[in-house]
View 1 (cartoon, rainbow over the protein chains, first blue to last red):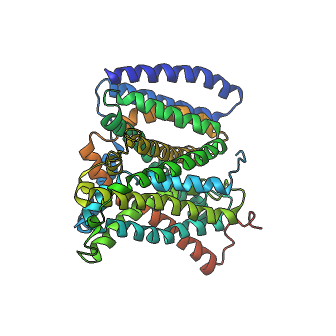
View 2: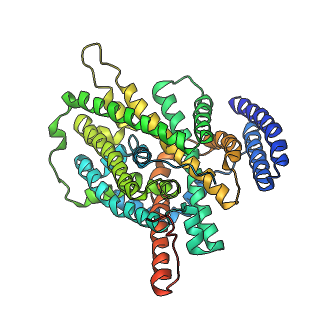
Length: 80
Length: 374
């Protein structure tokens, strides 16, 4: 339920933001900014929607935990 | 790039905020379970261990006074390797920007406002961060000066108020288990107080008006933040004893509960809560700012402010995903965060330093950005 509300908020906010920013960026011919802005906004919206519909979003913490799992033994040794 | 400059006094408050926030409430349990009643010695040693780390940052800053960390790594390592290293560093900044709202809402819902939904707290927090960055670094740095003043005064107040509850026998016997556990615990504390300052490399040399004063300020801020952390650990062991400190998630919050002078001064722990919120805010905003600036430098954008609001939307969702529960977070903070910050906060700058020396001394290349030096 909360996820749904957040997704709705993110989509509405993202759309309003795009309506304001994109024409301005086009007018000023800031094409790099435009691409970065669109990619990030679409990413933000789709993440919120995925979360709302109960899909699992890949967790960057899991990735880092996997990368650093070989040194877990050293940390355990330090903890004792 | 717009040339906003910050003063060396603001560097003090920013560094102190970053140093304190990574540790002040979280580290107590970890260090007390390792070093037991000698935890406070370990934390004081950790400040000393951090000095060489800070020296590396200062050295890099002196050689490249007009560059941020992303630009330094691209200058030293070339376009491709430099971009990979900078990207990995930016991922660290992004990761911390996800974490801190999670910590905030977790703390709020578990200790202060149990019925408020997570998302509301996070949304307010992320909105405040975005506004701070949209106002620019100068405004934020001035705000951080006020914040650190408030934090220092409130912190001293709480620590003085809690002295009647302190029991000196909680510190005895000193060095019961020898020096080794103390040294081990101080390695952990260094990972939480000194190494997160790597993010200051995105602000420190490039945006500073006076480099010579700035170096001293960086160290002063580090000592101020480290001192706050050490004293809070010392007081938790003095008041609660190491066993309770090791078992409580927010030990400073817990011992502030014990302050009760008449009816006027009770419920003091909310003051600790203010200290935590303000330092966390400085910490997270610096990380988020570093990410936004670094990303716009990496993508060669002219205006970084356009990226703030879309990123804030991503932050809102991802700060929910990042830690499924508290047990996951506690495991992650020890077994992943410590090696992670060690590679990025220590190995990476030392590697850059070595590359600099090899290029300068062995290959006799004209490297470094000396335009800013007087």
